[in-house]
Length: 266
Image 1 (tube, rainbow, N blue to C red):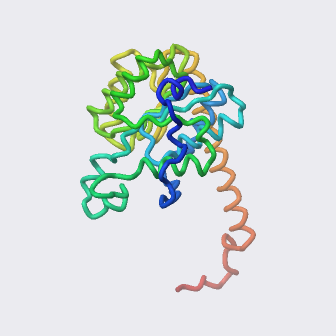
Image 2 (cartoon, rainbow, N blue to C red):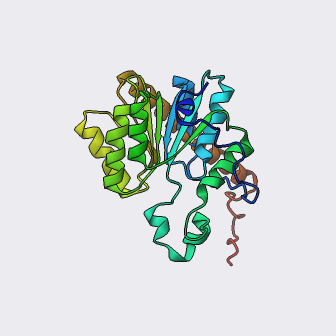
């Protein structure tokens, strides 16, 4: 049973959707970042809200992970207008292709639907085609308390700050908010930093992602995850350096020329 889906829809929007001429397109950015796996493993959230879904790749990745973990009563609510961003619309030479315009109207919603069905996740994904603030008020009216929120909507400072203010209120007391585009877009980075400082929160960040929680234990757990990842990267880099040095030595690259002979030039 999907709590939000059953409150929103009298008929399943995936059934008989006009997708015959729609192509599968799984394009996305940062959709399989390690924080997804770590948070799902740690929290095992049954209600996840994604704000900004694009073509659905990150939502489907979370669905894959959650199903592997056998999380019961799973529901992933995907909130998006599927109308594109200001950055996309500003590129006239690309906008028609990127947004799949038809009579000037983006058709990305149907790409999202096609992808979800292709991956077999229509049983757990609930589409909510609306602006992010409207999605917040709908979920608030339904008394939703998601254990995990993934925020990946507008990149402008004002919009991102507003989304943080709204959705952090919606987040359950024992939940985690994962944000995208940290250090990628100046507006997002500024909004996240300011929101954390203004609310006395510890922000855990790596390039492209940031984490916030009302629960200090969750913050410490995610700090530990990040420390382990960084330590692993250092070990991998050291191992590669040792391997490269060994290969160079075995190939004779570091062997000095015989006495009395100069190394060849050119």
